[in-house]
Image 1 (tube, rainbow, N blue to C red):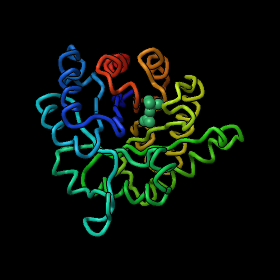
Image 2 (cartoon, rainbow, N blue to C red; image 1 turned 180 degrees about the horizontal axis):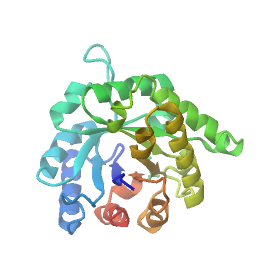
Image 3 (cartoon, helix red, strand yellow; image 1 turned 90 degrees about the vertical axis):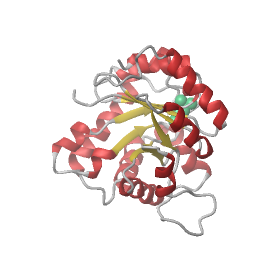
Length: 258
Ligand code: PGA
């Protein structure tokens, strides 16, 4: 498989700048080389809150750790209270951005359409877009998982070219598994990942898109269950919430991707 694993930590609304720097120091002290520049090592990304970004970028500089934001607005500037532009993010030194997380969709009115606008803004600014998709428990119970995921993927990637897809990573995060400790089984996750990869095959003429696009799993991934998930043929890494807040847990997952 040519796809390089990505392990991305979504810190959510946790860690002040001082706490974020302390966590990066812990990661550096404990990583034992697993976050180093090495083709075979996973790409490791941490995604702090906006006010923590610059300090974490500075502390991570000189390592292979990459830093991402948790949101981006599509306008260049203007009257959009509480939002942040691509140029503002670039200025902090981040290289990645999470888009369309289910918490944004559930609590902050994010829609398929705004996810698409944010994705295109990230690409325009040369950021890697980590685009989140996933069904709720009700949707899974009523057998709508594939329909929901297909709708989300098609909408998020509207007007995104095959070339742009080099900078897109998808994250399948079943909503019922996020922060609940109720992880999807290896088989449940693999089935949706394979479905998404097939969907990419049908959406893009070049088979290279489906072959090369990384699809991460997210939702209660921990050191104890990561190996099984990461061994699945279509799971190319993880988007980690709770377990990304402690260096030992996060590195435990990173090591499963080595
Ligand atoms: P969790 O969160 O690992 O705490 O379930 C994952 C996510 O929301 O990205």
